[in-house]
Image (tube, rainbow, N blue to C red):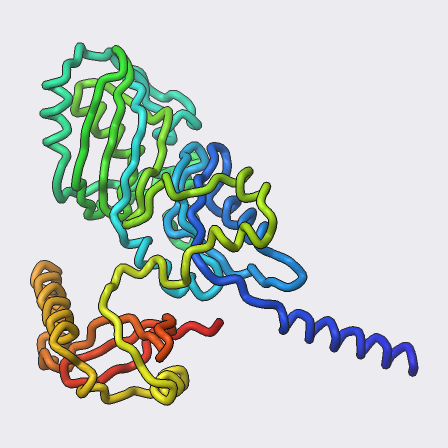
Length: 355
């Protein structure tokens, strides 16, 4: 009986200790090394922030990089994962090297060569004109060697089994593109593009447009939204730091959010929002905030007009009832979450943080 009581007491103490551990929350910018998957990097970061006093189990990245690729990989921990989609949806910039004359089954140097072609003579004008042809809105067919799923199975699993799956083309936008010749069979590519763009496919398409074949031999992500690779820390450097110094590398929980507008609330209002209750804050909507709401609604309307089919439910909703996202701050100016606010003064909680 005594042993059983001792075990139960030990179990309670263990559970209490686990509950008492502080949740690690924030955003860290990692310079991903070549050869690691994005998920392996996430696991490593979780391990480096774990301690008897800290819980870093909840974490995720904001956009996969292939194992061959290097560069910026923002990782969200704890409460910051609630806002990771802002960077998932953000434009991204890459620098890559295209090797002309051969095509691989994966579109990069990790694959096997499946076709070869002659390389035409190129010059700066040809490459500049070609770059201009690829700028703008277009459609791209995702590669078979990708993590997209079909019937619950990743496409690269089908590819490894020699099975080709029909993939619908996806809308992408190339905002900026430069092509520079390195030597007779290599081109340097620098591109800024929308989410969902596969640089491997872009490289293959450029090579074909030039009258040859090609694949990537190097790929580096330089920017994700407002984040830059120069702000990132590599794994060995992070590993060499003390735990306290690692925490100094964390950006705030709301670092991924690209919204400037904010509303300060008193303690009672904060408490009600955390309970999931709506507020009427019509008296707190000043002119700058009203202008922000109107501008956001204008962007929403434009996006709706460009989207087919139109959302009929939104068309029937009066403008003064349409909500837009806003940062929520407590009386001390600390970020407490995201809310949705309307011109009629209705404020409802959207994603609240619990640190």
